[in-house]
Image (cartoon, rainbow, N blue to C red; front, side, top):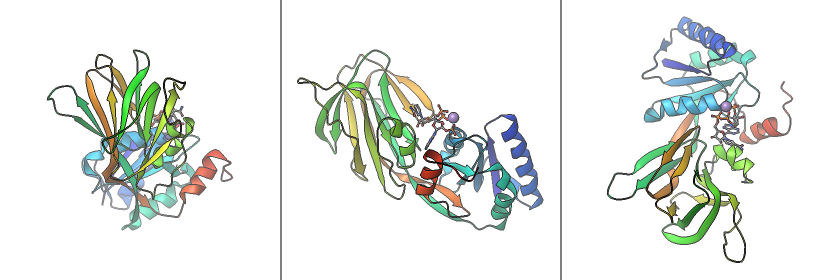
Length: 268
Ligand code: NAP
Ligand code: MN
């Protein structure tokens, strides 16, 4: 079996990385950053997002596991003191996996240029540096509302505990093939109207954002990476056909992770 390790880059994570690397080699596993069967992320959820994007081209072949060296960990749910236990589990192989849904984002430029396609593990958010975001929101091709405000966020179920939660979105269990659309400070008065509530869309219900002002640029963030886009014709979002696979070595139910992250973590 081949493995790779992504570290946050701080001292603690780097030390753990070299320990794990040596231990796993001692168990005759091969270190291979190009074609790993398993990727171990050491750091925080942000580190895990990076690991996911580095290996998003081989989701069918690569499983992920995360160890956290910081405070909170949704994707990184193994603690440093459990390192030996995790190594033994990985070395035992084969391992079980669980799959979580991802979000497909297509940014269509004006004219005939090809759309740019992205995959998100947490979310895609749309904001503007030139004032209010004004977009028509279409669901399954039907006009739903005209949104005016700071922006919109489309999150996966596992991303629902991140930015989405801060925007008043619901926490969605990742066994549901869905994504959530939340508003950022919509303008609502007698003239301008939006639904105001987060929407949860099932698979095959795509959501499209069509800017009214083509001359405005948009700041589109996919997970931890932000890009500026000019001349945007539309932004299309739907539940992806692809999924992320987590190597599962023990039961750690999603609601327990929610509890430990937001209510209290008695393990520490
Ligand atoms: P960051 O600014 O370090 O991330 C903000 C926080 O979100 C960190 O505490 C991060 O955990 C945590 N986080 C990431 N994914 C999560 C998840 N699925 N569930 C619960 N918490 C999660 O930036 P980053 O580390 O590169 O992460 C990018 C993410 O930050 C974005 O995808 C977005 O969801 C989130 N974000 C949140 C807000 C907000 O809450 N107002 C605003 C912007 C972005 P770690 O410290 O372990 O990395
Ligand atoms: Mn972070």
